[in-house]
Amino acid sequence: MPVNPGIDFKLAEEEYRKASIDSEKLKALEHMYATCPKHKGTGPILKEIKTKISKLREKIEKSRKQKSGGYSYHIKKEGAAQIILVGITNSGKSSLLSQLTNSKPEIANYEYTTKQPEIGTMDHHGIKLQIIEFPAIFEDCSDKEKYPSYFSAIRNADLIILLLDGKKPISQQLKLIEKEFYNSFIELGGKNKENEKVIGIKTIVTVTKENKKPKTKFQLFKIERIRSEIWKNLNKIYVYTKTPGKERDFPPVALKKDSTIKELASEVHKDFVNKFRFARVWGKSTRHQGAKVGLEQKLKEQDIIELHLK
Ligand SMILES: Nc1nc2c(ncn2[C@@H]2O[C@H](COP(=O)(O)OP(=O)(O)O)[C@@H](O)[C@H]2O)c(=O)[nH]1
Ligand SMILES: [Mg+2]
Image (cartoon, rainbow, N blue to C red; front, side):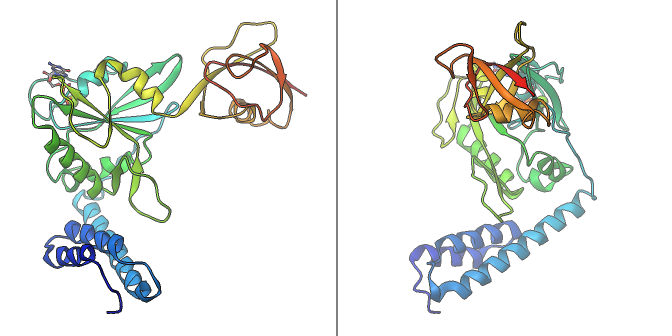
């Protein structure tokens, strides 16, 4: 083999040979791909590994679908963002859901109270956010019961909040949860890569019940700060529209950070960019309150914008 492979590649190859189940094989192949030197000579080998990876992924997905009896579960995305609460049983997910939202899930000190996703709506200054309690994670759940369909229902989530039970070993919980998500082709905290089946979802971590500070690559926050942490990690701003001579409108409009008047206008009405004449802005994005601005003006949180149309 004209590869000149390093030790890491050889280890990954060994891992592949030893792997007995498909998900282990897949992980090993991905290690092989990552550690294989990338140059002209290795092109064919890389290609071969890639083909094996995609065939294996298809196989795993197919067997999952069969296991869940073709059961499919869909959650309609509502509001400005979808946020998922994840943790082992009894980690405090339902308590948090009921604290943040209008939802009244069952909270109990026995295990596996919440068998299917529970959905609630959180209000942030008039912006609606969809909060979902994911059923408790346990060993190999990604392959069991209706879990495969639950995992696929949240692939487009904007943020995952990991709740770690401070009364139980922390790093084990983290490892388990990461693994079950990875087996479901979701990389917690990962970035989305093009043409890859594994998607990344932004993830933050909190510890319930006890004040512990685990070592983790994820951003940690205190549970008391949850509301502002959620908003901060969505990378959004909210701004108000207003009609001349009147108070600002309520509720405000949620936009991506660094949005301009143009994005606000098209969010409010599909014709408003074409009909746009100018806008007036009050707030942090302008030094002169009530200044006349164009479509390219960048907005900041809590700005108030008066759109003037043709
Ligand atoms: N001391 C303490 N107990 C909590 C906390 N959050 C939840 N619990 C308790 O832990 C048990 C399980 O809570 P629950 O929200 O149903 O957990 P879930 O299984 O993750 O939904 C209940 O008895 C709660 O009262 C917390 O922050 N501190
Ligand atoms: Mg629960």
